[in-house]
Each structure stands twice: as structure tokens, then as C-alpha cells.
Length: 107
Image (cartoon, rainbow, N blue to C red; front, side, top):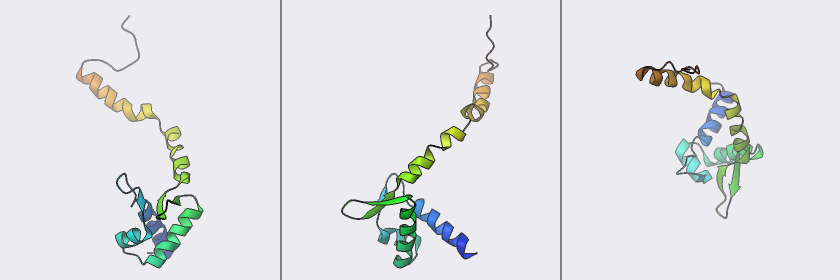
């Protein structure tokens, strides 16, 4: 695997290490979890921190997800066409109950 792709994958692996249970992680924890050297982990974390993807907070200096992800996350809803996603489900439910699922009034 080319090195650039490997680095990108490791960076993404770091991001996906965070979850609702583990909102704040130390470099040591990330290093152990991903089985990469601590020195390399610090380089990844520093790069992600420079871009605002990660931030270090508190007295522990643990990493947390940064504001840049919050900003990117707000773009997603504008791309989603909710009606396109739910329409097949609405039509199926309406069919189960003998309705057409259209907006036409029954007059």
C-alpha cells in the first residue's frame, strides 16, 4: 500500500477511535489502540490539530474532536434529500394500509 494512503488511513483510524464513550483520548491510548509507535502517533495528532480536526483540552492534554469536524458536519444535512431517503419507506407503509402515499386529497 502506498505510504500516502497508509498515512491517510491511520489518520482516519485515529478519528474513528473516538466515540460517545471515549470522547477524550491520550496519545498513549491511541498509540496502543492502533498499534503504532507513540512518536508517530504524536506526529499524526499534531497534523490533525493544526487543521482543527483535533484539539487538546484540559489539564490532561488529551485529544478531543475539534471544531473543524463540527463545521464539516453541518454541510452534510444540506446535501441530504430527506424526502428521497424516506419516500420508499413511506410508500411501503402506505401500501400496507391501502393508501397511495401521494399528496392528492380524497376530495
